[in-house]
Length: 356
Image 1 (tube, rainbow, N blue to C red):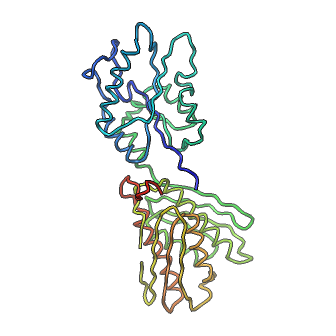
Image 2 (image 1 turned 90 degrees about the horizontal axis):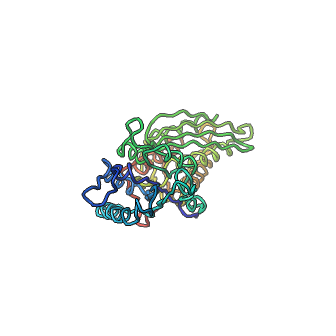
């Protein structure tokens, strides 16, 4: 398994962490004024798995009018203040710009952050620049990542935290092969279904997973049903699992586990672990070979494919006398097991390993 990429917030200093210094440089801790809400915001963002890097232009740093010591002493006091609240910065990049040197390290140039971009370890989809000037947004654009500008349209640290930590967990997947053309969209924090696979009973089963799982599912498949239902069922499972996997992201804050369901004379036992590792066990003895246009042998294959692309351990067992009820109990049970597993309960990583 490839290493997890770094999610980094590249944060400006003056006007973003601390209020803009007056004309005279800050020379004491008493003159340090933190931007409103920065401490609780960074604590929440730290809990959500982000790392912090300071990226700051400091005009004339190192000149007679702005000696290094005049910057470094209060800067270290600022860092100590953040450390006292449990907030550390992974690195800091300060540009000692001189008007005549044309430094490529000066924001919005990417010289200061080029190492992160070249490393291949930066998560470009979920790393951000946070500042209070247009140059910060330009830096974000030059890096190919997102950016936030404090003060624009009333945006404050609480608003930034809300957008990063409480974002909707959505994903869309297009899977097109010679046998099937599938589009899946999921929203883990909404409900409702729009499903059309060409197999009526299978549509009903997918509706059961989403409705009992508590997530919104739109799934449309154009498959080679003139041959049989195999490719449609398999590829829908793979696409659905991939979409759920993407929507879960790091899987931080989820319930992770879920469990069981009786249905009339049948009893389905379903356990799920959204562990990031596919594993699959299945026990069923169906009295009939088909329910509608869905062969019962494809029930096992559906859940095996789902386990693979969702990267989850799935254990399913069902007993009963009515094949329709047995299959439906499995799909409903899978949904009910997924509901608490998918549920967002906070921001902690549900693993002693520190990642899933």
